[in-house]
Length: 111
Image (cartoon, rainbow, N blue to C red):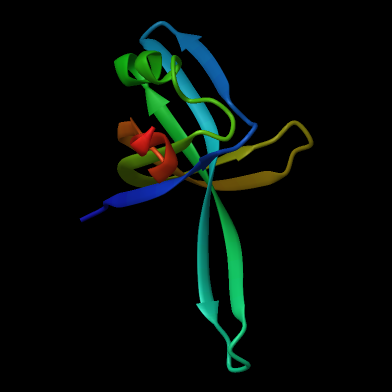
């Protein structure tokens, strides 16, 4: 089964494109992961994911997916390959989302 669930903050690269079949929204999502090393120090690492949303869901997401917003996405991994304008072969891994929701932070929920 190809299934992905991520919770993170939207990056700056928000792009909406329109096609004959509808809209496509793409953006980056930052997730944090951490661990404690052998010196008992907490180590945090930010991982960036490229997210793609299509059609009606893209249109709905356009209203609330903004830079810095914490969201939850569910989808599947997709892989694509293309030749860029400089003639280089580019491989991309993306998450094609089928569910996108805004996540309320604890302090917002209690206000």
